[in-house]
Length: 416
Image: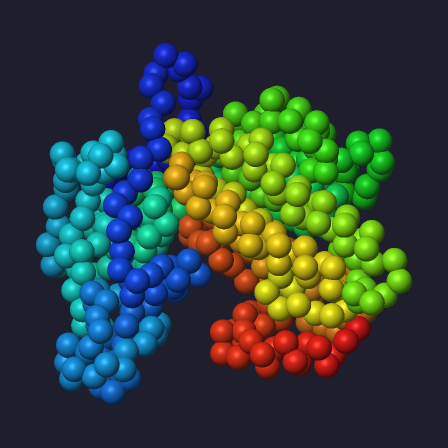
């Protein structure tokens, strides 16, 4: 078992930087149903709708009754270790670079037996809790940790490979003027972030949160305007090599329908900030992050986009804003694939209407800034890809899965 995760020392420039290799990526199409569950932090398996038995590996028919009616369902996340081994010289280059690597057979309490990555404290016959995680290649894997005892999961090197914990990492929050900035910085500091860089556009213009940000230790306000290629390039030159987690909070909210007068300019501004701003940041920062995706226990780990559920469910009262959010969501999927080649994960955090001035005319419930900050950090610690914050966001997401046309009609009927 490894010791506690210590604050990293300054890097020796003569020491080789480990290349960002990836674990095996081949999976069947059915296996990606596990990936979808892992992306949202659920522990789910195939379950037979006829006899109720859980199945693994992924199958076309139930191994108990041969029924073809199999669907994904949340499963009990407990089991027992049957056997384990510590691979000292793995055949795959990714695991060889990180050896020894603990794996073992675990009997799930719900029935199946699977090969799992194991916490360093696991032993044969030990009761364990099971997790469905995403590895560096973005594929679903099982991880088991002791069910009893107190363990800081971030201390286990195999767990750190499956998450993006901000402890001892340097974080960029792109827009200090965003209402969530103060709560987010406070939550990152509580999670152990080493340094937090907060971007501020138009530095001459005052904003209420500035004093609250400046008085916190380890927080650095830096010039950054995502609508300016020069500003983004200057930031990347001065700080790009220091950033291990990017949290893109740049936003531009203006209500209005498509047919309203003067809507072209707000739509253009929203695209400029939300979509092209993300592209500018990615072009400047992503290549350096990808080169450091395997740079030790606190190397570059994650890119986070703070988006709106209106990118999935388009409310006519926020037509241009929803279009920009939808474009950003589509762009993030392409960015996820490119960042993944360097072992850097991308997480989208989609929120419902927030408790801010631009959503003041909308009815409750709304999402508080602390709830958003907690969700962002929790998603990093758990290594998630998709996070929905607030009752409205969660409700719309589930309804879209069931009947997207019904959601479209219902939102259209409630025009603002």
